Image 1 (cartoon, rainbow, N blue to C red):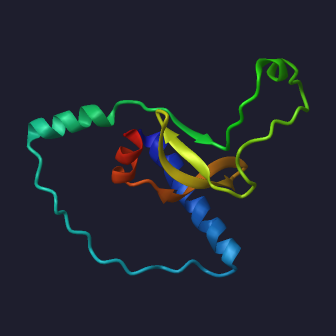
Image 2 (image 1 turned 60 degrees about the horizontal axis):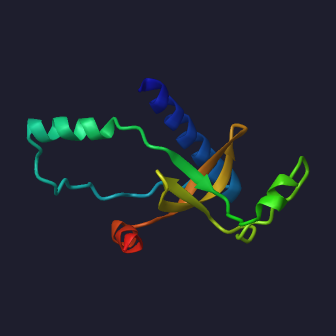
Length: 132
């Protein structure tokens, strides 16, 4: 778990540095009101159940776009082939968890690795509407 936290800290620091470099100035520090925990305290049984759920692995994927082609054209693809996608350049990517859209984001490069900066998180209400 420590390695995951170290990686997240590195990403956060690199993103903050990249944002400061893009703006040409020091990043602004926002004054935040203290968060108040409005949720009721959890019992030990509820905490145990929540801990069990938090350890379930999920698959997160980023979708650049989609395309439908017939099998004949699929079999003709080789190195250097270009497949046209249904998205315009610069349009946000979809962020999916276990195949469910949860957010939109943009590609960033940090320390020679690709990453995604979330630009819009889909609300729970919107996700439920899409299920119907």
